[in-house]
Length: 324
Image (cartoon, rainbow, N blue to C red):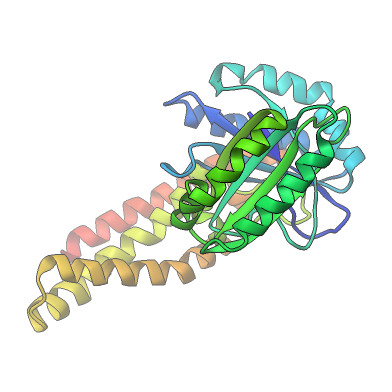
């Protein structure tokens, strides 16, 4: 499990971002486990918020969990706490890989504002730190010329907590990030860096529905888990697709304008995506009490929200069955 950091808000804050790979087929169990994490961490001194990004294959196969604290001391206290150790012990059977812990100071440049980022952790050979920094600057100069490049930042090790250097490289798309990672310019520079290093790990972070959902702010609550996000997206997606097909796609595009089904369906999908950008934030505001419940009310509120949404699903199915 790789742990990295993201920036948002306070300049003096510190973020821990955990990239972890889950045993295939165990994602639901891991999502449920995250509920116990937020219930525990929200009571820790200095905790600001938590944010979760689910996997987005094939570019990103890891879960990414961002935990923000008001200071380095508060973040380190959590990392070394017995509460955290107990939580991790109970989830080891779901994880693939080892823990790598990194802390990154928050700042104006951020870590995960872009559609695609590569997070590279490097354990530098003792005595090679200056040579590594010089090599890192040459790499940064070359990657800045790559198409779609949006920024990068490098964090030095934190003695006793983080032994690796961490570089976050941000691009505007998975395609451009992949081109850079496989580019001849980067591959030419890699051998020199590898000679200065004992271990190098690179992982991809990709955002999905994340832009539609609140991050938690300073409330000490987690970002909504993926299953809640998916339920609300479906709540808006199903009626939009059905009604557009009933009122526009079939009577206007196909019968009125003579479009073939495959082309009318394309325009229907375009309209659905555009509408969801307005509808999903709107429904999130109405279900804010369910998306980010208080830690002591999680189980009760979750059940109430699920029952309500399932009821709306059923109502839509009933009404639409009579319209078609």
